[in-house]
Length: 316
Image 1 (tube, helix red, strand yellow):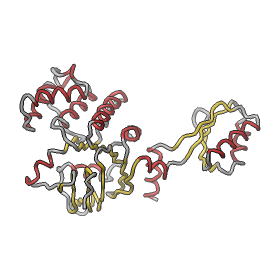
Image 2: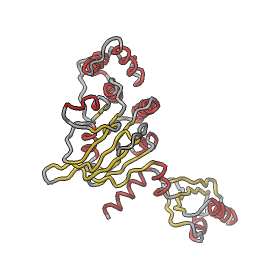
Image 3: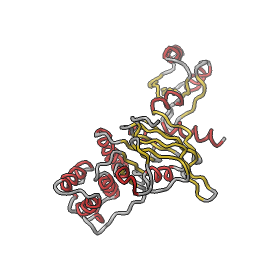
Image 4: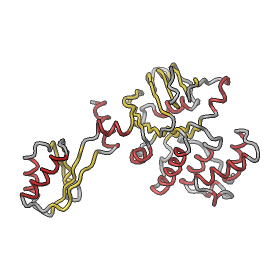
């Protein structure tokens, strides 16, 4: 029984190319309205999985359900495929067209009629902040603008499920910020979004759930909150105006301190296993030892650190 709250469900999804298994028996479930981040090293199977979800690749075996309906590659469920918006990492643009002509072309492909077509083009231009470039040749756009135009083309037909494969690859920080804002807007209007990226700081900001792939297998699939609570180790950043040896001596005497390292600008990052009272006790011991502390704050490991540690465990 497929959960009616699920936008994407896969059952035993597998893709084999000759002797190579690119996606291996993946059971995936993404709730409607989620922004789901797909993480993994190159060759982990992310793009192959995404292509199968977008009906661009035929599974070797397994099943895919979108909004509760089974996805097939034949023409029997064309209406289901219209619910998908797919942005691959290498989708071509037509440099000799203007922005408005490009969107007009794809709107016609999706059989959008006037006045809906004109209204929808205006909506996507506003959403990706390209109204001022509507009559510009695509060849004159920056890389970031081209990627936002690709997103506009992907959502021109109002899909309920958006699948994005490395959409911020090669973008500068400002272009990534603009792209993130567009994704946040799409989530607010109810789209379910699956996005793969190597820029894990972007996924940490955008996503409420993540999946981690390794060698074709889905080794983690959970909410970001659960991932942090289970796998993110607590850290304390400490800075002092001197007495470094005395500071390290106090750390050695604290049973809640598991390890520490010196950071490039003189701070010390402490791996800490205690609770709030233990943190208070550590700070008090440093003050009692007359160590001139000018910064003492707690943080959790970020998504990138968790991923790298998990990847190391998989290889080990």
